[in-house]
Length: 260
Image 1 (cartoon, rainbow, N blue to C red):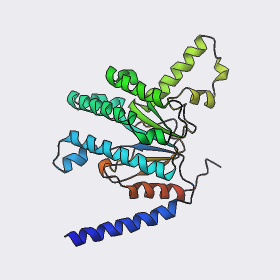
Image 2 (tube, rainbow, N blue to C red; image 1 turned 180 degrees about the horizontal axis):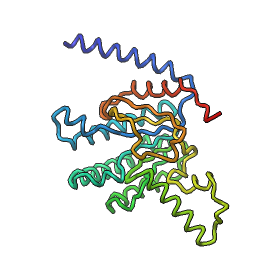
Image 3 (tube, rainbow, N blue to C red; image 1 turned 120 degrees about the vertical axis):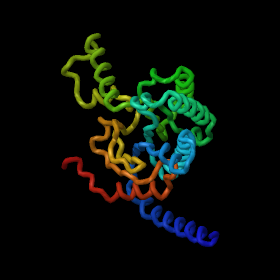
């Protein structure tokens, strides 16, 4: 049994190195969006408490972010909690809010964030979150606001339609105040009022969704118009470095013409 396991691990390492050599010298996505799906199903398949799936998923997120730094990916946007997720059972939502608060505290203490100059930002209708969580997020954002080497966004209390509506409201208020005219509205102005306006590149080059589901579920609806999509039949807690490399290799093989 042990010999068989070691053999499998050996094959895994060889395959991972082979994938790395395939992707390292080709253009890599500057901005990756990830829909972290399948935490509960992963736990239930192992007869575990569904809440444990989120904790394992959070650990996997930290691991994955290190892989992205190693690959030189500049921006990562993670879809961690949608506006629709508030409809889940109250106990589950409360547990998630506690987990988010705990992990944002951990981010503040992370040497990796400061070493790699990672700007952290939460995007979404943050006013819907518990006040304690809002305060922790503000502290993390304040501590990293001057970093510009890498960008890490948490889409939390986020909805793509809500983002578009909020951008339209911001523009409408400026028109009412006389700061803008209707003729000023174009794509650049609209993008300046999106949640992602702080990013050097708002549109994700690649969006990955785990768990086998093949839809965006409202993730970055405006920004994803020309994103390459990669749907993976693996639950988020079991996502591997191999899976990330495979997704990037798939991205590199696609022809991106943008209508030309």
